[in-house]
Image 1 (cartoon, rainbow, N blue to C red):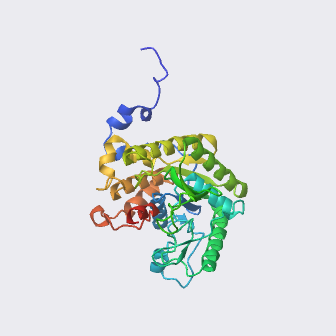
Image 2 (cartoon, one colour):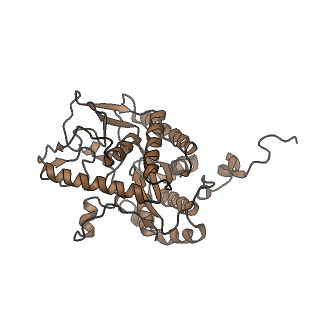
Image 3 (cartoon, rainbow, N blue to C red):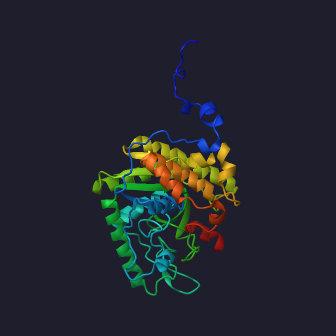
Length: 354
């Protein structure tokens, strides 16, 4: 037969060979990575709640999960967990959009000073930080207490950005809320976990592919101004959105959100060196796996799906021979882990309780 451009391509480029002919557990969409993580590398995480899964496994696997914002020495482990230390490398909570992440960096370095200073909670009148309203579960007694904690937090963010070796970020959402006077991006809509909804003060906004790419690349460039050697791992959360403010069915919005983020991730990886893509979204949503990897609510990922995506992460971004064994030793019986495994905090879930 005559040669054609596909004649000598490897098996992983063909659906029949790489998907159809393999059992689901053997499907692995990650072919190569531009770098490896060493045990001494300080690995920081941020993004949507799915990024917490990587944080949990890093902390349990002997790798250096970077906690730049630590609890006070006299705080118990249980209290530190309750107050959201170690959820991520700093206490920023979930960073759902790239716009939110870029503004966090700019706030940390004094390049953006939002006009919005504080919110109060209607249930008890205590103060919360509008940019991470659920990070302190009891709220703050005074505005000064909240501001002091914010300044300490932003100092920790600077320290993390300047000294981390590897940064793992998960794209989570495109829908967001803005403070109209200066465009400050909020983690949650006003009124969900503090503040009051006022359409004259706040507005809904849904990001496009180009905006997601623009803001994340700007964030990468800001980070590399202070830390030029940082390596970045980017993923798209396979966890479905909990609600949409668009006037359409949540299924349609979820597909739009994930498609925008997946397309944006592809552009980002092509645009800058030392940015790797972890195809967690792709692995979970490929047709042989989708029904096996989602929980009963069909939105969150079950322990089996988490194990499989984390195995892919360790197999490719670390020394495969040793880390495959390490992952096996980390596995917990799925039946007992089911709903009560490592704590994952999704701030978005406050929408339903509110």
